[in-house]
Every structure is written in structure tokens, then in C-alpha cells.
Image 1: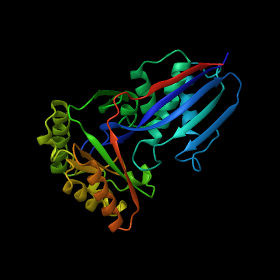
Image 2: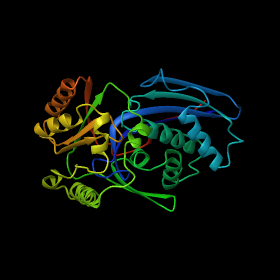
Image 3: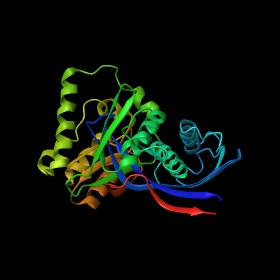
Image 4: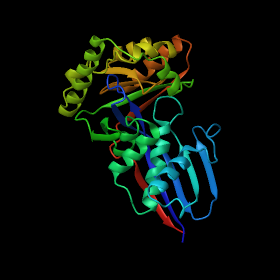
Length: 308
């Protein structure tokens, strides 16, 4: 008897402005995978949607590699040597919306269910962090909501919360890729003390305001001094897009993850914010399409289970 599981995983936005490599949020845009584990060393991967022409459908595939990591840690890699995988991708690739985190989490979550939930969610967070390198994207993909994450002695810890504000996210997606590696390459090894203090204050204010539901304190809470000034040269029109979003009523706007998406946080006029962001990109000769998303509250979850 062959078991099949379908998992849905949200896209994510990391940093949320000042929370570099620590804050993340799950968004209502999703990737789905259907997985069957096989005893035979046979691999079949079908892919539709975003990245269909770019993502490898062989042993290099990130979903399959993540599944293999989980099976090895569960000492079941000899029992299950192959898989049938069907991926439906909606999260844009290399745009700062957690496409790699979604692939990792979908693979390990699906495989974990098929081996009778051998690992807890906290253990899945650790496995995902080990694969991804940091927890800021994988944590919200697993837990949903906003997440605050740290790594202590290589151990990832994270807690999630849903803001007490009817927050919507307007994500302007430009029509070019930006690799995380390239976006990290422009960052300095050291930053001024005043910039560190700037970000500590704003990231603390951001979390407190979201938990308490106090919109007034969010007006400057999405600002950053640690990564955005250095990445501005990689995203034409970045400053103009952020200004346009705030001019139309957004509480704040920032780079989504490593970019090049720009994400605006708002409680009103999301369509006006979206239009203004698209136009600001266009004035800088960049085509962009804006999406209006909500905060996902569930994280990775089961859509369907079948036995054949």
C-alpha cells in the first residue's frame, strides 16, 4: 500500500525591515507538494507553476534533497530510497519571498508525516535551519504568523505570534532575479554602533507594537540601517518605491528578505499602495506587479492524505 500526502506551505518575508536574520512573517501565497515515498531507488518529480523552467527535476531538486536529509536523520534512508513528487509553485523564485524555505519545509513536513511524525515541529525547525543556514524564513513557513528566531550553539529557537492589527502586506514583485548570495555579498562585515542601536530599537518596537496592537508605534518601526542601505544599488528605484508606499498610507515598507521584492505593511488603502509601488518601479524602468497578501496563521499544513 502506497501512502500519499499533500502539504501546503506559505511563502515568507524575512527581516521585516530592522529584524535582519531574526524576524520573519508567513504570507498568504502558497506552494503545494504531493509526496509518496518509495522503497525502490526511483525518483519522479513533476513541477508546475513558478520556476517550472528553472528548477531541476532530478536528484539536485531542493525538495528531494531536504527529504533525504530528514530520512537520514530518522534512520529511514535505507527503507525509503525514492519518491514521487508533484510540486505546484506559486511563490516567485529568487525574489525575497522564501521560495527555498518553502521547498525545504514542504519536503521535510511531507516526509515527516509519512514516517508517522517522527520529529516534532521544533525538531523540524532545526533540520530546516541546518539546511537553509538560518531560521528567519523557515520558521514562519513552519509555524505561520510573525516569528522571532535566534540560534544559540547551532540550536535554532523560535516563537510565533499573530499581530493584533488587521495588517495586510503589499508586495511589489519586480521582473528580475536577485540571488541571496549576491545580496549578502554587498553587506559589510562590521557596522557602526549607532546603526546597531537604530535597528535594536526599531525591531523591539516592531514586535511590541504588533503584539500590543498599537499602530501608532509602527510609523518608524520598519526602518533599517544594517542591510537596506547597502542593497539599494541592487534594486533600481528602491527608495522611490518605499516612499511611494508610505505616501499612500502604508505604515512602512522595506526590502522583502534579500530582495528584490519591496513589501509594504498597511491597514488601509492596499490597492492604492500597490498602484503607487508599481508606478514608482516603472519610473525607474523596472516592470513590477504588486500582490496584496494577508498574514498566514497556519504555517505548513496537510491538505490531503491518500492511500493507494
